[in-house]
Length: 120
Ligand SMILES: [Zn+2]
Image (cartoon, rainbow, N blue to C red; front, side, top):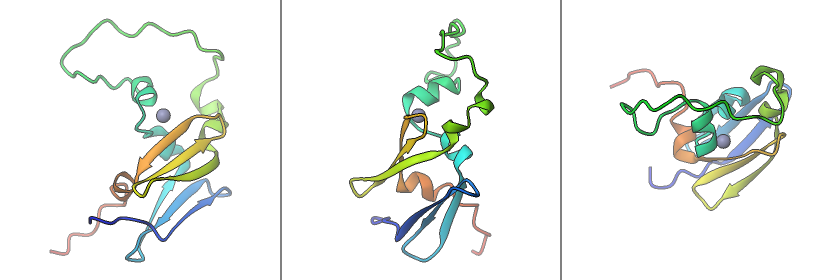
């Protein structure tokens, strides 16, 4: 697994999915909504309420004033991809329609495959 460079990355805007075709011919298809929800950047981790120090329950984060008070599911642009680019040889950079940028390493995407059937 040293080299995990996909053959192709396809976005199906109609279905709202991203497909990564791996060198072995298998593919990982991830709904864009899910992809955005698991964005590994610090901003998103924070907005998901992930505490970098579990066990330390600090005061709940003050409700930051947002520029817009739209409910999350109402902002469909969050879940639409406006552009993609390679980040070196190890990751996929995604620009979302709301201009948020995400970086997903190929390893991260590979781990989003459905759990393989136990064949051992
Ligand atoms: Zn993010």
